[in-house]
Length: 209
Image (tube, rainbow, N blue to C red; front, side, top):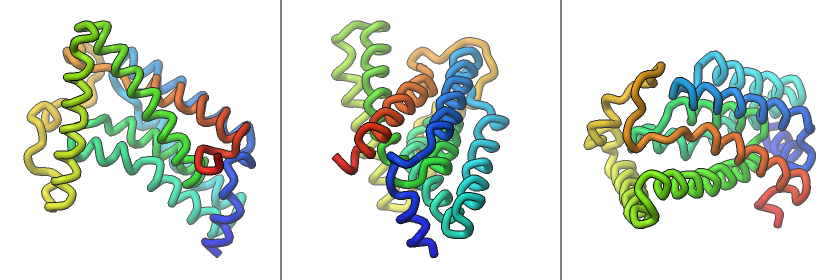
């Protein structure tokens, strides 16, 4: 039954427009709270996850629920990895998990790729704005090094050891002074969601090009 459910929801082009609209609104709300208070609240992310699971169950029964659960895992995998290994935002991970619950695994992959590309350009822009273009190669190198370090910790089973000190101590802030190198990622998720919507509706997702 799970395989049947995956097959039924496997075409991102068939995702109803109102599902994308829900996710766009969630991304917009998350962007506002992230920009204002540096936090993506649980009152937004948890209902989004539970709502996506409920939608999968109502629309596809047990197989639909299983497909939604796989979407949660796929949608949040990269961001959970960043959170565990390098101090990325937990709110970003939960927001992406919620979106994956509504979209299913294939559309979630398209969303991840779109958000990653948008986030990369946003990071380059933010870095250039703060320190000039000369800092961009350095930031990209540090980002790649951090990712490779995370992979090494996964392979050696030391996910929670040797975390950067800032990643251990920085909480979800409710205002106050922003960290020097901080920039909000929720706007990238918002723009990436719009881009993924267009790609899925027009082309059936990146995996079907």
